Image 1 (spheres, one colour):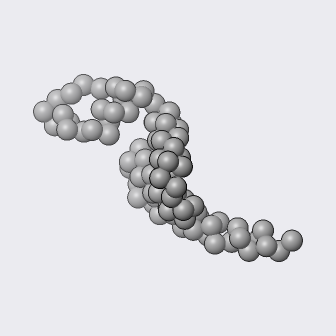
Image 2 (cartoon, rainbow, N blue to C red):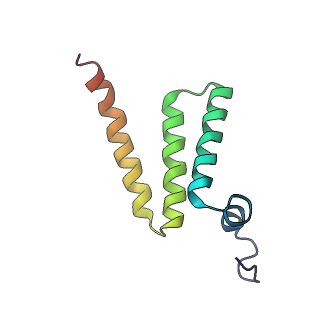
Image 3 (cartoon, rainbow, N blue to C red):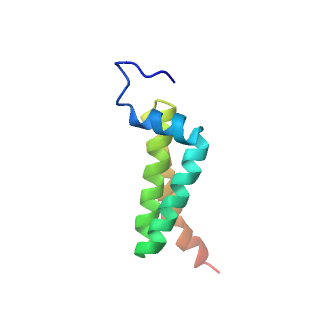
Length: 91
Protein backbone atom coordinates (compact mmCIF):
# COMPACT_ATOMS: atom_id res chain seq x y z
CA UNK A 1 0.00 0.00 0.00
CA UNK A 2 1.35 3.36 -1.01
CA UNK A 3 0.59 6.35 1.19
CA UNK A 4 -0.54 9.36 -0.80
CA UNK A 5 -2.16 12.66 0.08
CA UNK A 6 -5.58 11.04 -0.28
CA UNK A 7 -5.16 8.10 2.07
CA UNK A 8 -2.65 9.13 4.74
CA UNK A 9 -5.36 9.03 7.44
CA UNK A 10 -6.78 5.65 6.39
CA UNK A 11 -6.08 4.02 9.76
CA UNK A 12 -7.97 0.79 9.03
CA UNK A 13 -5.94 -0.02 5.90
CA UNK A 14 -2.70 1.09 7.51
CA UNK A 15 -3.28 -1.15 10.51
CA UNK A 16 -4.31 -4.20 8.49
CA UNK A 17 -1.69 -3.92 5.76
CA UNK A 18 1.28 -2.75 7.79
CA UNK A 19 0.88 -4.40 11.19
CA UNK A 20 -1.26 -7.50 10.71
CA UNK A 21 -0.95 -8.30 7.02
CA UNK A 22 -4.29 -10.00 6.40
CA UNK A 23 -7.93 -9.19 7.05
CA UNK A 24 -8.78 -12.58 8.52
CA UNK A 25 -5.76 -12.48 10.79
CA UNK A 26 -6.92 -9.03 11.94
CA UNK A 27 -10.37 -10.53 12.56
CA UNK A 28 -8.93 -13.36 14.67
CA UNK A 29 -6.70 -11.01 16.67
CA UNK A 30 -9.65 -8.67 17.22
CA UNK A 31 -11.92 -11.49 18.40
CA UNK A 32 -9.27 -12.75 20.80
CA UNK A 33 -8.84 -9.21 22.13
CA UNK A 34 -12.60 -8.79 22.55
CA UNK A 35 -12.77 -12.12 24.39
CA UNK A 36 -9.88 -11.17 26.66
CA UNK A 37 -11.44 -7.81 27.51
CA UNK A 38 -14.83 -9.42 28.08
CA UNK A 39 -13.30 -11.86 30.56
CA UNK A 40 -11.24 -9.17 32.26
CA UNK A 41 -14.20 -6.82 32.78
CA UNK A 42 -16.72 -9.67 33.36
CA UNK A 43 -19.16 -8.48 30.71
CA UNK A 44 -22.48 -10.28 30.27
CA UNK A 45 -22.78 -12.63 27.33
CA UNK A 46 -25.41 -10.41 25.68
CA UNK A 47 -22.95 -7.53 25.48
CA UNK A 48 -20.15 -9.75 24.19
CA UNK A 49 -22.35 -11.27 21.46
CA UNK A 50 -23.46 -7.82 20.32
CA UNK A 51 -19.90 -6.44 20.29
CA UNK A 52 -18.60 -9.47 18.37
CA UNK A 53 -21.39 -9.21 15.79
CA UNK A 54 -20.79 -5.50 15.30
CA UNK A 55 -17.02 -6.05 15.04
CA UNK A 56 -17.35 -8.85 12.48
CA UNK A 57 -19.99 -6.94 10.58
CA UNK A 58 -17.93 -3.79 10.54
CA UNK A 59 -14.81 -5.55 9.27
CA UNK A 60 -16.71 -7.51 6.64
CA UNK A 61 -18.72 -4.53 5.46
CA UNK A 62 -15.52 -2.50 5.12
CA UNK A 63 -13.74 -5.31 3.27
CA UNK A 64 -16.60 -6.19 0.94
CA UNK A 65 -17.81 -2.56 0.63
CA UNK A 66 -21.34 -3.48 1.50
CA UNK A 67 -23.48 -2.69 4.48
CA UNK A 68 -25.59 -5.73 3.67
CA UNK A 69 -23.02 -8.05 5.28
CA UNK A 70 -23.28 -6.21 8.56
CA UNK A 71 -27.07 -6.23 8.54
CA UNK A 72 -27.22 -9.92 7.62
CA UNK A 73 -24.80 -10.85 10.40
CA UNK A 74 -26.69 -8.85 13.01
CA UNK A 75 -30.07 -10.28 11.94
CA UNK A 76 -28.84 -13.89 11.79
CA UNK A 77 -26.98 -13.51 15.08
CA UNK A 78 -30.08 -12.07 16.73
CA UNK A 79 -32.24 -14.92 15.44
CA UNK A 80 -29.76 -17.56 16.62
CA UNK A 81 -29.35 -15.82 19.97
CA UNK A 82 -33.11 -15.71 20.55
CA UNK A 83 -33.78 -19.28 19.38
CA UNK A 84 -30.85 -21.02 21.07
CA UNK A 85 -32.23 -20.90 24.65
CA UNK A 86 -35.58 -22.26 23.42
CA UNK A 87 -33.86 -25.16 21.66
CA UNK A 88 -31.69 -25.94 24.70
CA UNK A 89 -34.59 -25.85 27.16
CA UNK A 90 -36.64 -28.31 25.05
CA UNK A 91 -34.78 -31.35 26.39
